[in-house]
Image (cartoon, rainbow, N blue to C red; front, side, top):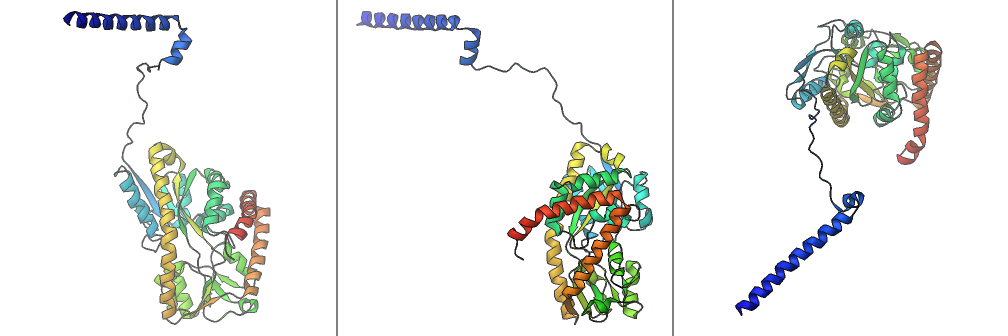
Length: 378
């Protein structure tokens, strides 16, 4: 028996050796290319150092706010952006907010940020439209797009590129950071039933909406926000277009006039931006610029959602205070729309930059119109 086991063991060893030898012969007969296919290649150890961005130094950016940071949404979202950026950067990138007038009057902010005396400004770009009327189109457009359509134009319709180019001429990089819901159409001391009621009406209206109102016979009065309530309450003016219901309520306009009109044809949605000195922006790391973009994207989401809720609450309170809430009669809105068309033609003829941006926005809206009509309820 022991002899049989020894023979079997010897046969097994011989078989293994023969198998290994045959495999070696087969491998040696293969071409290098064939062997490369049949054998998995092990990557050679790399001696090149890994490329990574060095840690960014801590940066504190000085930001001038054009509006009180306590104002609902238009100001409070600046505070939200600063808090989010501090968290997301682990305190390595901060926005140091300064209240209006602290660093410079609002009318000087564009020059201050362009010169690098201020790192950034929190504002709606219409604040600087006296320098270039194209800035109106990146803030709020009369009879313009609602928020979703506006953001689509900016992100995918060439709007952001036009905005960048427009501000680059002033050494500024714009980043849209908040979107506001529609404004009110205004507060009136008496009811508006027809366009004839607008003739000679003394009304506080600001910006490009004032030019529209002038063409329908309104006696436009320009004044700061702080003076508007008292002027309306005293009867020095008969009407005022101010802001969103939540902000109007905060300023107490329900105590100054009894008729509140909608829609806010002059501002169907409004963009608020962080306007950075271009050298400051370029001096930030790619990660830091990404953090700002992420924070502003989240701000847009939050302002869209919270803005709708705030206006619902504000309207309930305003109605409880005895204010009559109206919609403008169709003939009034039609007259205002026609007046806006005249303003567009005049400004397009006067300013090539405005004309280029307007053509781009109008073209996008034309292409979007079919989806708007098919996809959404009228």
